Amino acid sequence: MIVISNTSPLTNLAAIGHFDLLHRLYAKIHIPEAVWDELNEGGVHWPGRDDVAVSNWVERHTVQNQALVTALQYNLDRGESESIALALELGADLVLLDEREGRHTAQRMGLRVIGVVGVILEGKATGALDEVRPFLDDLRQVAGFYLSEAVYRHALGLAGEDSDFISGNS
Image 1: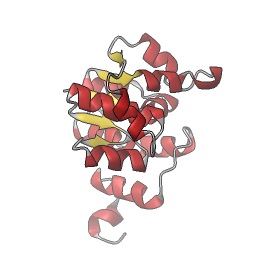
Image 2 (image 1 turned 135 degrees about the horizontal axis):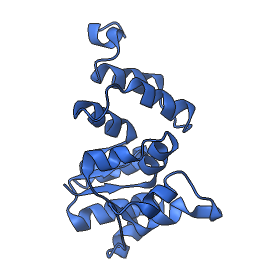
Image 3 (image 1 turned 90 degrees about the horizontal axis):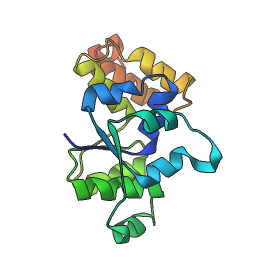
């Protein structure tokens, strides 16, 4: 399975101490150079930067189709643009993207997309995680990841951890 990741899933999972979930679920992750650059932006070592640097299962790539990257940058940042372009170049099975416009653009281009919440749900579905609630709570409280109450409740319902969602009382 070829999986491309943008910056947000890497930084958010690293911030809550679960960067390794990506390795357990996907074995190998591919990132464009723009994502590496974002992890080092402003001379700051963002969460996930050191994890990426030492993980032999994270492979960095230079995107070849710079014309596509330039076109995508009209609406997206460089990391999102290069992640989508790399996904198309490698024939990716999955792209990890959190930003709404990036997700919509990738989907319009025929790519399968999930965000960090989807990764956590997949973790539970595959047995890599016992429950999602503590991970979602940590995303909000530790990582500072914006997660609306509706998405939070929906994710808990999909994971079978919200009795109101399951019974239709949400």
